[in-house]
Length: 236
Image (cartoon, rainbow, N blue to C red; front, side, top):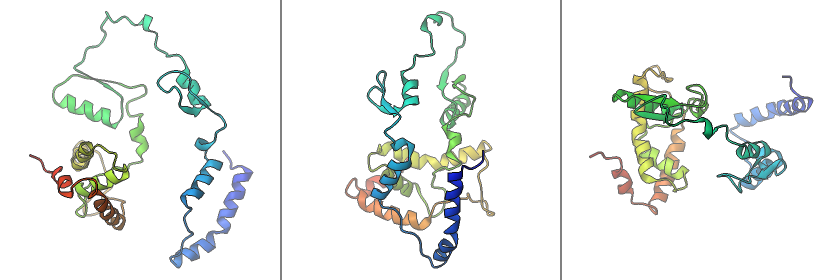
């Protein structure tokens, strides 16, 4: 689809500023970031999720009272495609030990592990196997796999990112098991980007991680004893 005339004009305006921006970058100078108030104004003016027009309150169902776009509200208020009168529960068509609803990364992992233990598994998914949110993650996985990293820092980053509302036990399990999950995926044949020496290619900033972890560690002292956080990762 060709660019609209309006978009072409915007592209010209951006290209016209390129030489000045390149010179600023060479001097290690950058345009100041928008403040939170300025960002809100831009979002309210241009972002569709911030527009009040074309949205309404859902009238029935679990989402009753929530505000959604007209199309989403229509979908949530529509009748179910299931017809209970057509379902005969006395007739069993399939039997299984484990029924997994979904076909993404978590569902597939559960199916593989259950199958490895000898269980008969059936996966039920509304689309094809693999059509899920996992494929939308663009290849990013968070795990402490480098010498300069550890589950301890992963734990702090995650707790801080969740504004200290996370379940500590779940975050501890996530941070501790993430490297093990990476190794398990490699055993299954998943190919990750790697450096020439065989280490995993990572994109996080070490400076940012060190700074963030220092700040979070300071904040966590008010929330929970630092030694208690560390003990979470010790296996009995």
